[in-house]
Amino acid sequence: MKYHLPALLLLLVLATPCAQAAPLQAIQGDVLEVHLTAQVARPTLQCLGKTWPVMAAADQHGWRGWIGIDMKTRPGDHTCRWQSPATELDIPLHIEPGKFRISRITVKKSMAEFDAATLARIRREVQALKATYRMHVDASPPVAMQLMPVKGVESTPFGAQRYVNGEPRSPHSGIDIATAEGTPVQAPLAGRILYVAHMYLNGNTVVIGHGHGLVSVLSHLADTRVQEGDRVQTGDIIGTVGQTGRATGPHLHWSIRFQEARVNPHRLLALGHTKP
Ligand SMILES: [Zn+2]
Image (cartoon, rainbow, N blue to C red; front, top):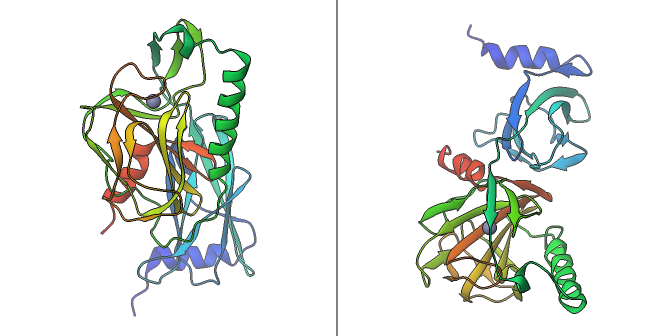
């Protein structure tokens, strides 16, 4: 008789309340895919104060879930937990600080110092953008990006500490990809268009909700080719590369929120490329 040993061990471990799984390692901005290879009723996955998406594993043997680690999550030790009516399984999670570089840009004064009316506009736009991170979108795709929205040179990486005209600003929450103005921008994953706007700092912006609390923000577009409410498939053209808003040259800014956590697009692309 043959036993599948790891699954058997895990089942034994699950029989004990508050058992522990193998520890996870991550860095700030990571997205982790975790597996529960046990035949239990649909579990929940809790980590860093949030509940994360869970789907049945492709082979129907257990479950898989995804955890997003915000770029500013406290480095050190945390505990995640699988929970189902019958069992609890703790997963120790160790987070290392991200190795983020410094990015300095120089822009004209109107893009660095704002009068009261402009400041009010920027705040309104930020609130509208943030509201999209919490919108519900029905979706079936797993948590992974299928393609880069444009090909080009990555001019500012994820997490870079930004200095604008010498003043420290929020860290860079996405990646900048420099390429020719007018280059078509593709949806990196299927979803629904949640927001299309001309924003003061982000310029022409399209937000795609992919479901599971996963949201792509695509900014500085020359023009947009979609409307709020549209459904898009992976690869659909949503606009073209430009330099609208606060930009020092034509590029696409692509940032991703996962349950509001600021995560590195490259981590989600890597998950997309490891799938069968
Ligand atoms: Zn950017």
